[in-house]
Image 1 (cartoon, helix red, strand yellow):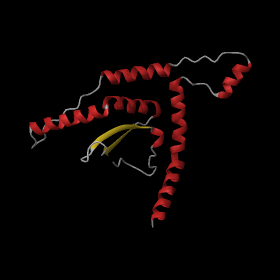
Image 2 (image 1 turned 90 degrees about the vertical axis):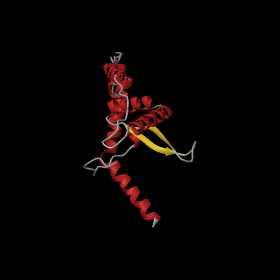
Image 3 (image 1 turned 30 degrees about the horizontal axis):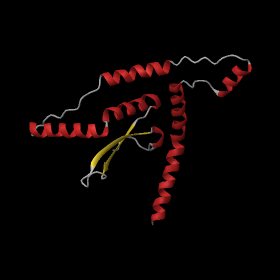
Image 4 (image 1 turned 120 degrees about the vertical axis):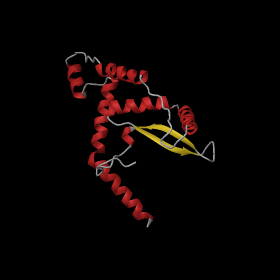
Length: 162
């Protein structure tokens, strides 16, 4: 029984990998290289080296993305809760304080910027939100940034399913 579940998970992984994830990884690596200034093909570099000509790279991608991320940092939104139809101001204030504490513990502004940067460069950015029981048996929220190349999207999905 457990082997059937493992076999089905392995088949599903291979299906998702072969139906677009491998292509995404190739595109994401190329985009990350462009951001880092590695914008020449190896064959072109070899031709230039053979003719003793320099490979000049003017990295406009880095400057443009740096400006966009600077705007994101400057225009960060602050999260605050308001009372709903039947809610109270005290509950909204408590929720705001809980969010501020979770944000502070996880260094959420930095994580948000990393996820935003991943999204700009590769086209995908992901958060990983989990309960962590290392510090408290009641659990604490842990939020981190996940590499976009390590998350496989379901090729059969037609809508978001959290």
